[in-house]
Length: 557
Ligand code: ARG
Image (cartoon, rainbow, N blue to C red; front, side, top):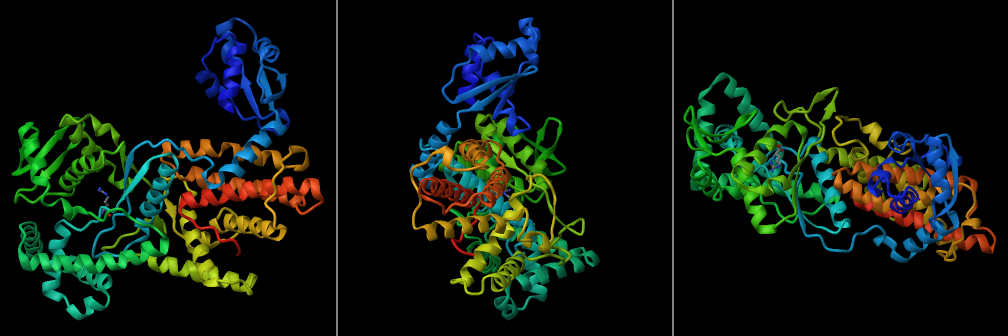
């Protein structure tokens, strides 16, 4: 609608400003009685040599647009009132017709790769990895809504010097039976022990380096141990993905690139980008620390594997973009990575994007695995689900399928608590906060959806004939918001920002509840059908918003 308005203002101004420029200037008035959209004329005054007020009046006199019902001039502002009956009908009938496809971009736009979650093998799946997992999954859903095919890749941290440490630790203190019973817990224990012992005995570090080298060179015994650690860890990770309802197209982690790095190193050499530095090889970068490619002993690094991965993905998927959903503490790594690819002469380096996010803090500090002090995501999810079930037992003890609904609500609470925040902010981690079922939470939105669902069920009718006059007070702000949904989807993708969808869903739930507090829906005939259609549309968009975030919407709760 903004584009339509901008076009007619441009015409009214004899195209003194472009449609685009006008669109950027359009504002949302602070109060409803000042119209639905406002155009400030101040910056035009100088250009046209007239007062803002007279420009505004000129626009008022000349504007012609079918979706505009009224135009008022206040000071230097043109306040525009939409044609409510027409827009109400348009928006609601479109949603009724398209259902959950409302806002979906149909034209296929190609592949986009999302590298997300990517936990480290043999370490617990921490709350820290939760952010990457839920942000990445939501972004992939949003990309699909925007017409892309999303490729979800879990770049497992299953390679690197830490496996040398783990192998040495296992040989010294490992107990096969204990590890088989509780793999990640035991592996973490001996990993922590390695660090304690290595502080006293540096020889252990040397052994660990040698063990990793043996692994890279394909030593059979070492490889078999590594494979065992990896398989056992993956089984545990998959239970978490199942709880969250998240699937991946590929679990090709760092190890997958072990045999794909030499080609990249060779190309770097041929392009004369490799520089020897203290026996190691690096790529020098302007205004950045150099990117380390191989160590003195020839062992490769995290960055080397990421280079190989970027080339592999580029050729395998021909993606329009590759997103790396990884905490902001790795910003330097990704800046270096993209720069190296650019220096190699590949202009697709600009299609690589790091999507950083803040940390989850515990008592103001970053969580760390090494000290063994950590909150396990699996425990958090279980606690959230248990709390959700307790709430149901209190409020709605007769509810059917309590278990699965408790699951949907508990998990939804955890996911929403993360996604409602601006990505870059650090989040203080607090169970009470995310489980607060009133306020800005997932359960609040789920509850609103469930209320509408039971209303529609009771009515045994989804309504059809829509007329703005019969909807009642407070419906208009909801209609305006529904109209915005397709725009929100575009912006959330362009800015790689799922919080826009989360905030949108909160606002829609809030405005609807305000409406519902003032208007009865199951009333006499001519209003009833229209109001039911309105409710149905809100429920469709609420459900779809939650789905984009990776949250389910139970019909009862
Ligand atoms: N495993 C890494 C970590 O936990 C994250 C990997 C992110 N993806 C990548 N392509 N580097 O820190």
